[in-house]
Image (tube, rainbow, N blue to C red):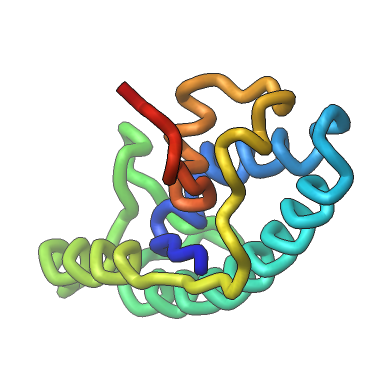
Amino acid sequence: MIELNYAALRSDDFRHVLSKLSTCDSLDHKVAYRIMRITKELERGLGSTQKEWISLLEKYVEKDGTQWKLNEERTDFVYLENVDKDVVKAEINEFGEKKILVDRHKLKLTELDKAGLSAADLAILEPLVCFEGIDLI
């Protein structure tokens, strides 16, 4: 069983590395098929989290046409009047900690040998990878 929190699932880095893994043509065909099945489940989960994310933003964040407004530094949203930012940030953190469960087996680290993944890539994909039986020291 694969368990991933919403924050990781929604991160650009995770989606980029998952795409890199999904398009790798040097993997065993069975491993590639399993990756495709995992990716489909994660994309389905991303779709449902997107609806929740939009609902959350609609309650608290100003919109400029179709875009959510960001502050001048582009580090945070511009919140609606009378919104307690601490409450919003707590809700955003709570949202990010929610879990998605994918009823698939994790990928074995040894199955990804030919994928050309960096250490940073593997760290991002850690929730999808089984490290059991691997001497990591």
